[in-house]
Amino acid sequence: MVQLQQPEWVYMRGGLVRWEDAALHISTEAITRGLNVYEGLKGYWSEDVSRFGIVAMPRHFARLRRSARLLHIPVSESYETFENACRELVQSLSEPSRDLWIRATLYVVAGHWGEGTEADLVLTAYHQSKERPAGTKIGVSTWRRSSDDSLPARIKTSTNYQVARLARIEGRGRAYTEMILLNQWGRVAEATGCCVLLVRDGQVITPPPSEGRLESITVQIIASLCATLGIPFVERPVERTELYVADEMALAGTLAEIVPIRQIDDYVLPAESPILTRVADRFWAAVRGSDPHPAADLSVVIDTR
Ligand code: PMP
Image (tube, rainbow, N blue to C red; front, top):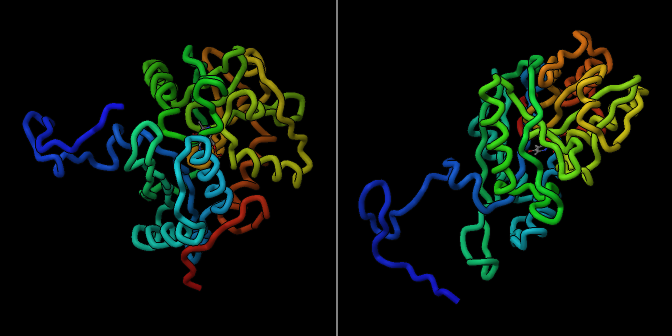
C-alpha cells in the first residue's frame, strides 16, 4: 500500500505553500462535488413571517444516513445534533424577506480508499426567493444516469453529480434551465437535480427509484397530497416519447419545489396545467404552514409568536 505522508510543501495557486496552509474553501466545486454525502433541505417562513419551519427534517437525516451507509462513511452525529446545527445556522442567517435552502454535507475528512474513514458534518445555507417558480423549458440530455451497479442514484453523494454537470452544460447552449437524464434502458430517470412528474389522462405519473432516480422526499410528499386531493398518482416506467405527448409536466424537488414545464426539446406543452397547479397550490399551503399536511412535516426552528 502507498503510504501517504504529510510533506512540508505543496504547490498550489502558482507557488509553494506549507502543508497546513494548503486548504480549499468548503464552497468550491472541488470540495462540494468531492467525496461526501449530503442533503438539501428547505426552510419556509409562514405567511405572517412569525414562524420558520424546515420541511421533513427526520426524513432528510434518515436519507443522509442511508447514503453514508452505502458509501461506508461513518455518521457520528445524532439526529438532535443535526437538528440543533440547522437551528443555529438558520437563526443566525435568516432574513424575513427570504426563505433558506440548507445544504447538510458529511465530508470525508480523513482516511484513504475506505480505510480509516472519518466524516465531518458541514452546513451551509443560501437565501431563496419566496416567489413560486415560473414555467420553464427543458431538454432531454444525451448523457445517461448511471446504473445501480455503477454509481447508484439512491446514494446522494456529490460525485453522482458529474453527469448532471455535463448535462447542464449541454442544455445551457439551448437556454434549457434543466435537463432530463435517461437511464441505461433509454427511459426517463430524473432531471439533474429533481424528479419528473407528468400527467396523462388525469393521472400524475413519475418513474420509480428503480428507474434510476433519487428516493425523493418531495415525490413522497406529492404522492400524499394527491391522495388527499383525490388525484390518481402512479409510479411506473416512463418512456421519452411520453414526455412529448404529456398533458402536463413539472419538475419536483426540495430546491426546485414544483416547476411547471412549458416546453421540452422542440415540443410545447399545453398552456394550462390544471392538475399540477392544484397539487402545487396544496404543496405551497403545506410548506408555508397555512394549511398543514402530515406529509410535509415542519420542524419549527424560529417562532416569534
Ligand atoms: N433527484 C436528484 C438528482 C436530486 O438532486 C434531487 C434533489 N435532492 C431530487 C431528485 C429530489 O429529491 P428531494 O425531493 O428529496 O429533494
